[in-house]
Image 1 (spheres, rainbow, N blue to C red):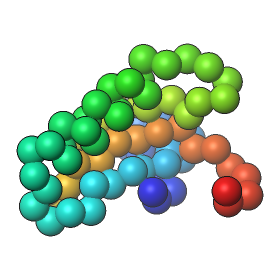
Image 2: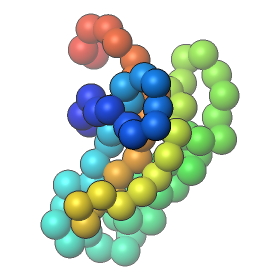
Image 3: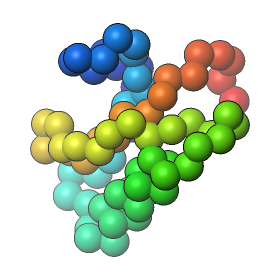
Length: 71
């Protein structure tokens, strides 16, 4: 997960990247499902998924950035 600036957004985001060079179909499906579920949830204790995309040939999704100590 990286801190990133998203074009057109006023605040920075957390960018989660699927690092595998050639992920299998099951891994991609699980990654997408995680993003879709996160986008549907609305709770103050859960970080919201903002977008899913492909960048630099890698599957990524943008999340709300929560600033604080590392877990």
